[in-house]
Image 1 (tube, rainbow, N blue to C red):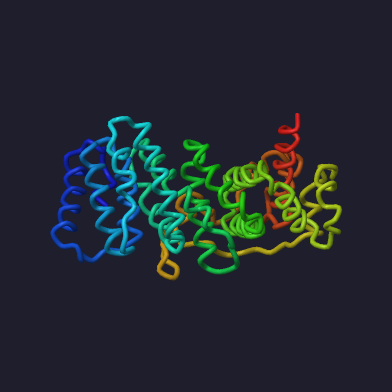
Image 2 (spheres, rainbow, N blue to C red):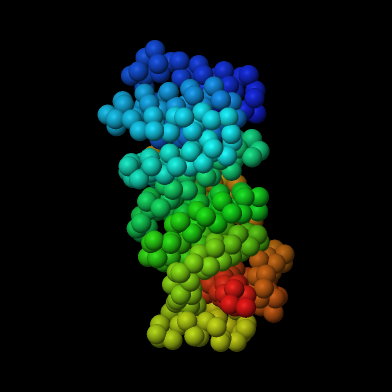
Length: 340
């Protein structure tokens, strides 16, 4: 943990990492958790201190030879130890992409480890960590109803809430990467957002969920997103007409839509503190989106664009169909804006 906290130029932060490297050099079988040490190494390959980067390269070579029986970091050692930030940061991204390609099985654990550590990292170095994990997200081809997929989406949504306003490009890239080559992931993403929204009932939830829907709606999977949302609004709708309906449906009251769609209510999404599921770290969404004991009248603000529906929902729980409608409206507005 001490290798992440504090400014990069801090003697204690620098010294702790260098001491760790020395331990692995002296005792190459020193026990470690591979995703944990790999995430730290990748993070340190973009450290402002050139000697720290050299040490990170040295440690990665030891770890690769120990766990993978071969090392590829030598191909990047010159660029990683360059004095030019644009050079070593680009090399860090290329190295991470190569490791992601060669070691797909580490993807989920690396994402969990990054989520665990990113809040400890000071300032702009958080952007470096978000960049590290991007190529690994492309390995998540088949999200499903498993607890592992729920952990993945929870962590990604936590990052969206925590950093979505500050690192807009980086967060958008994560969601785009998750769907651009895997349109089948859209179903699980939408389902996750709706279930989470019903459970958390935080007035700020919708604004963050809208970001995710707009991010993936800007890609070629836009029709998939629209179809999925409409299915949750009107489950028995003829899906051959879904896309055209989404762009022509009148802005009817979301309160009326609740009678056509599901009124499922969930009781919990996650504990107030981070937890582990199947040994995987899962961030706490309620730590960034606290769940109120009772939905207050200010809850109307979560409806954002659908202002006419807000007053009718301010005194009761929102339904799945209503939340899906809210997200669909914002996506429709974004799509029409893009076509202008």
